[in-house]
Image (tube, rainbow, N blue to C red; front, side):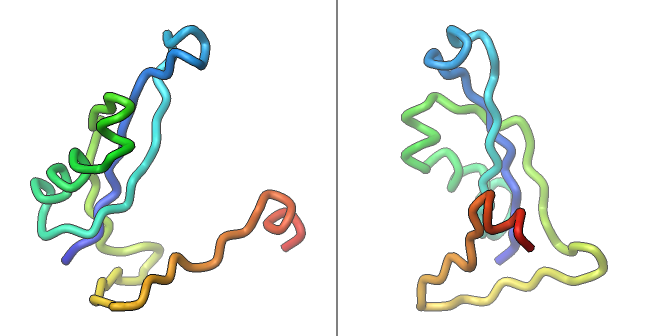
Amino acid sequence: MKLFMVHVGFYDKSIGEGIYETHLNYFIAAEDSKDAKTKTHALKEFQERSMHIDGIKEISNVQGYEVILKENAMQNDGEILSYDEAKEL
């Protein structure tokens, strides 16, 4: 498995009368770019908001560190810091 960042866009009518495109990034574990595209299209939020894919990037290393995915049966989303918590670091 590889890690992909999928950059998506969509128009939200509740923001600026829907004229501005909003963007999000999804991090997807997939075999290849095509598999990442398929998995992204299957996301409920992607379908509900009529999103489209603007780009897909394989993330293989970050600042000199290799990214290795290994299967883990336990769900752990990692630490999430709020705005205030991050500001205090």
